[in-house]
Length: 362
View 1 (cartoon, helix red, strand yellow):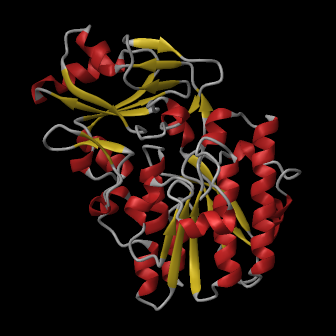
View 2 (cartoon, rainbow, N blue to C red):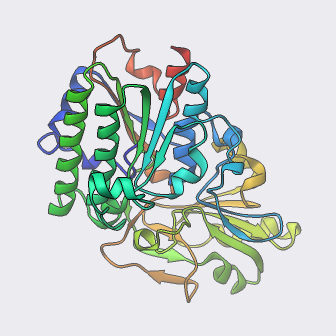
């Protein structure tokens, strides 16, 4: 799962291995889930079911007692992981993630679960000191760990690898630093294929990425217009603030008074850059979300707008600022390769979760 791998990053001259997989195997764009943030999509891809079933609706949510919590605890994941499903068939699985947070909710059933953010002494000895999480090199380190298991542990039958989208947040396609990141990923994919020629490689992303120019603090904007909210929580809020400053292209809005919902929706819908305002019930039905883990109102911005907590009600963003979370980052690439076995028709894959649903059917 290449975090943030917008299709616009793909350049066959930078990624010849992936280009061949796309040519010889299966390749198309599919829909991720909304909100287009990492945790909701990571759980969907790994479990093969909608957020309504697995329960992970974003990177953060508001608890029943009003606490803003990261959505990372194992207890919050309500569906079996890939590893749990396969362990029932005697297949051992390993989880590698550049981001430590992924281990928290997806590690159940894995015999190996590790991250460069939480290195043990053996990892340091074998692979060296991990690069900083705010670097592109950390993704290469993560793939090298996975490569080591492919090479030396044939008893492990499935590997789930999750990178970080820091490079995509920081650099647009064509930036020299982005190119170096992509070349390194492709070289490691080539090495993995060489080490495990009988393996099937399934690649997708959690979301795309767009330049953003404007951020709204919905609590402050509503208060200035006579509506006091309980909270307005960015769906992308997590611990990696250097990526996005806690902002996201969508927001869960929690009301103090349910009778104020229509008024709040009118106020928010009139703000520049707001593209979508739905009730809890509408959002849960449209996006297959767990209704108890989203706000009273769901808000999404246009391709240039994000939401978060800032000093004023609205602010301008730096020219280099890139983020996700809206409908405009929902389309993601899906690749199955190489073609060393029979594959279904490409149009049988409509959503990123369909990869795992196809595996279950097999």
